[in-house]
Image (cartoon, rainbow, N blue to C red):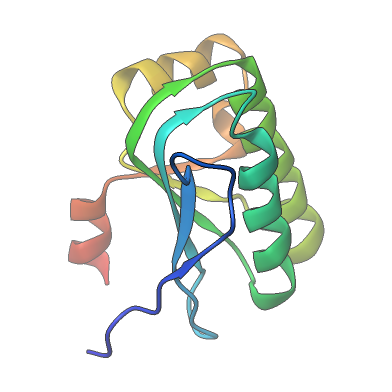
Length: 126
């Protein structure tokens, strides 16, 4: 197995909220979110999604290290979903979502716009 290519996007200090973990022509690129996905990290998240759009036929967003998602974070996820649907006609995969994130998606009625998966499930199927 080849090592993952890690590409970090320039983000205002002190912490980068997202990093592209791997880009492979045969699979969907994976982006990891760390910390909060909110008003302050919305633009860097969108920049990472925009950077990946021409390279991908889908998108995996690893939320295992996301601590908090507010309404702007939800908007960022919805816009990523729209971009994936427009480009590849597939829903983005959200990996390792917390129970709070699943509740947010369910209560706002947007859960069906995403594929929810755990990393353990992905390893078994891959």
